[in-house]
Length: 140
Image 1 (cartoon, helix red, strand yellow):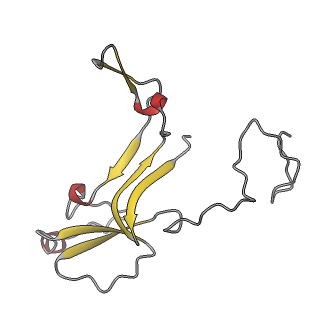
Image 2 (cartoon, helix red, strand yellow):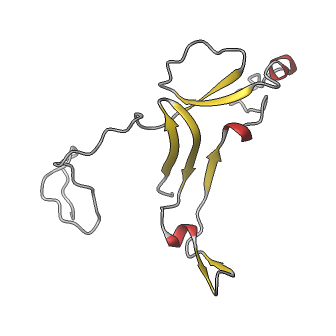
């Protein structure tokens, strides 16, 4: 099971793009140019999905039930509309006729809360003697 990361560009609760991926921001994951910039060396292949308003196919979807697919009438009524990606927390005014709003479940608040000076990032090679919420310490 990959450790999932999210990267995004936002303004309020509107998203310009949203990337859900297993990759880190590293040369190993994204690659580095070698041999006089003629070759890209990638050490770790990753998988991700990039959500862009321009790449969302109108009227396309899936359902977990037998009868949940959109009808032809529903799909044709959105043709020609601009797509707007927003978070589930978006409190925008009703959908105006110029754009279709698609909500993405971003797993944290925007803007994110800054870390406090007391916050310590977890690392596998650090010793933690204070018990966590499950009563565990690291290493065990």
